[in-house]
Length: 347
Ligand SMILES: Nc1ncnc2c1ncn2[C@@H]1O[C@H](COP(=O)(O)OP(=O)(O)OP(=O)(O)O)[C@@H](O)[C@H]1O
Image 1 (cartoon, helix red, strand yellow):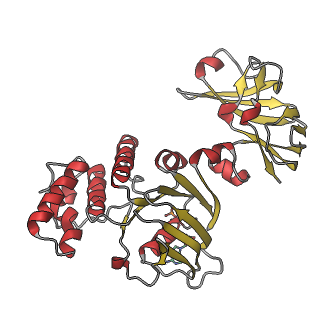
Image 2 (cartoon, helix red, strand yellow):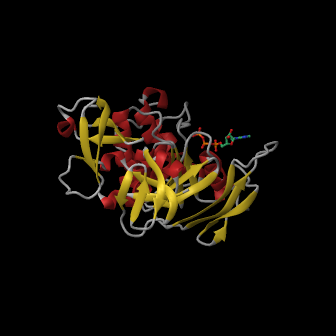
Image 3 (cartoon, rainbow, N blue to C red):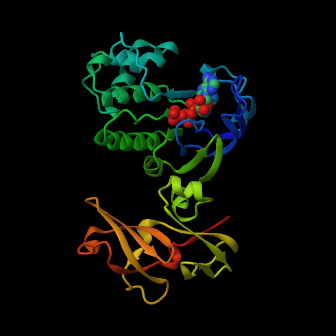
């Protein structure tokens, strides 16, 4: 079990004018799974490579259990990295691929075969040890890559978009497998993804990085309930942002007066609420009920997306298809905004 401490980690690539990673600081508890989340090019792989020792930072530090590892060679850091394209050795059997790390550590042959068999069982590939990687599906190859990483019992496991080459069904399966193996083995894990749902489902904590800078580092639900700014809220699917003024209990805007929950920002700002938290109808009573016109409706099977105009504002709503059945664009509708689901961003 290893506590990972990243302090002001920065990378400016040679010739670049802007840092690709700018003063990233994270404290990752022993055995925790943290997701580094962000769009393409935000600096996720750069971060992983610096932790693994494949790239030297421009400044900052990475420490394991309080000791800086920056001067340790990659092979002495106890870190294993699994890449999105698996990087299996093509001319070795699956079993030799999985056992490779142990062979390098001069573990004896019988012990290697025992642990390889155990590992192949764990990743649910018990009978495929003698095949070549090219004789496996993408999902199976990814499981071999995971087995090869876990067999050496690393202090820290780095997974760089391990699910991005898999189809939806396999992604779910691999996601569950990674989570259960990681919890069983208690390995501190950093998982890179650009998919917020994947981050939320897998991670104990999520670090959102935009343009090389850490935006927010929190438990997954906080990104939905209390995003730090509009960019963060938008990254997590937030679409409703209404400008106005908050006095801490009421938000005043062209939208009307909206009752707020306790503890929100006071002053100029933007009221935000998630599309799935807007309730159609007035069953919540008279508080925060707004009337407007339905402008658009999109049935998506498990949900229906609605666009509604209230005064000068247009809001997005995700509703249950049954609730939205029979409603047509052009119709006047009422919606309720439960105060507990509201949040004010400072502007
Ligand atoms: N060797 C390099 N030399 C110069 N710039 C680089 C180098 N590697 C990456 N970059 C730049 O650094 C930034 C961050 O790249 P990085 O690969 O860390 O992003 P990422 O978040 O992992 O993206 P993706 O999700 O597409 O893999 C990008 O703007 C990229 O162009």
